[in-house]
Length: 170
Image (cartoon, rainbow, N blue to C red; front, side):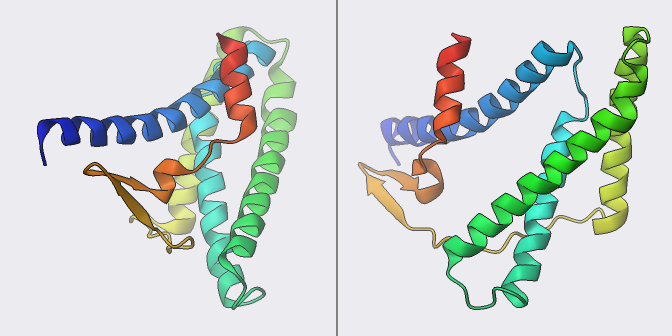
């Protein structure tokens, strides 16, 4: 691979990873803007969503939706994970943050760190500490463009709200 091809490949990889980082940073920014609190459990809520999606994928593909097209499984898993994360966020706000809303800001910060540790250890107890393999749901086709490999993951269009949110923050 020539230096130019290597540069272009790393550019594609960096843009893909950067889009994920931007989405997470946007979540932090929105939460801080609304409740004036840096929620240290934000990443753990993403983690719960990932494990919920994995669990739903494994369960649905072997029981209820066995033999269904991959896009049906993908939609069901995404909607299920969103619902689980929304319920978790509601529970965290209702039972962890609301009682200390009028307390000093340090209390909310300590609560956020405690929730982060709690969610990490809860999922470690439920799923173990080993890595998990996510089955290939979408067939991964790739295209060679001048020596640069662009996979379907790299070329997936970002959700419209992500591009709108990035425009709004500029």
